[in-house]
Image (tube, rainbow, N blue to C red; front, side, top):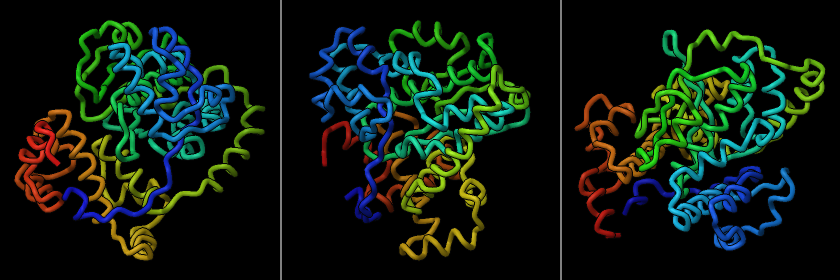
Length: 344
């Protein structure tokens, strides 16, 4: 009954460049590498070439199975610690050779789709603070907490590459529940960490955005930037899926709005409505679809209904409850209890 309110379209399979650090982390934790990879539908040889892509869902299955086999709650973090900007291909290489930190992060925001289609980054400014983070946007992905842990660790590595090895975030926010062993997280980030946060991101002084990028090579940018621009222009994506990705990342950042989505897609509200109408869709329908997906993931995480309502942009908890019931046929509390009881 959950999906009856939103008949699902056939969506392209979300993919990501393979992350070379995964096999090494699996071995480090004593997991059976071949067994874990094959259980996720991956051949171990896929990691022999950084250009190989894998289904985004397979990444989630690998991380989930590793957690099950080893009991380690910091698998995603460990993978992220070993991963740098080069893991996101041309996007990463152009970013670390940009003129300023702002331009570098904007490059990642605008062109991550050239190397992966299952998640997106966001950059939010609030007064004197900046937040740079990552949200899984593909639906029905396992181990989202591990993926976002790893992505924030990669973002941290990128920030230190841009700003220098002594750079520190003022605080780190992670959407995951607090692990039993927080030491690996505290040791790596060396900053206060907020677990069970509404989104996963680094928070830092906004003036950092205007810093020049350390050790940039202007000649590299002259060669790589046109290549990235061409890759971004030819990256094909179903327009409704692109809109959903932006909505999902903006919900994570707590800034979702029609105008904000239009700015991210470099389009006008009228053009947005016109393009969606060709698919028999509207912005409000996609917003509800994404809200429903996010609400379910937060309910499973035991997030309070009041907090979910606020994160999804509802002015009142009662409005969220009415909306959720229209989507699923059940109240949020009832839906959560059926998940606990294993009901369909």
